[in-house]
Length: 171
Image (cartoon, rainbow, N blue to C red; front, side, top):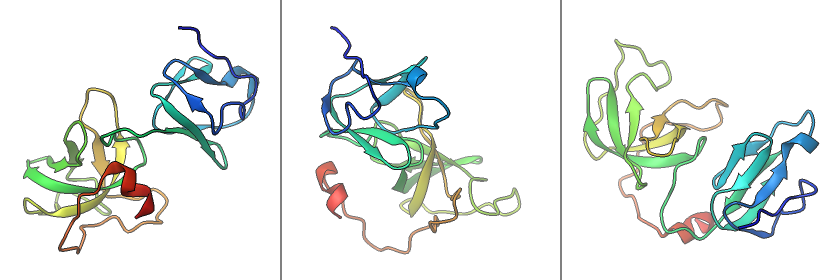
């Protein structure tokens, strides 16, 4: 399979890419910080596609691949809803409806200390942020917001609806 090489950063934006396509060449881009979203990975100076879909871009410099995948795959900085499944001494096990359960350290809350450990019952719905999401490992979650824009806290909702992944953008 031959890799397509991009001549400029915008050459693949809004076009269909397949796994292995090199969509960005970082050696030609100087003094720019780029955020990579789902479906992309960095190999030295090349950003390549990991899944088939449409390459998208949003300002200032975020790139991701939009595809019609059938399940949620967690990515760093995603904000998600999770359900507490189990409580351990150092963390909570959270169902995020992904390939693996997420874990939430007991200190990953605003003002979290050893004396101030939250108590959540099984079934509690939490609004969370993905901190680490590595392939083959359980994603690490947090209830702290780096930018202080969202209120990441236990949800007061009584009902949680399960929607198809294709419907998530329209809700």
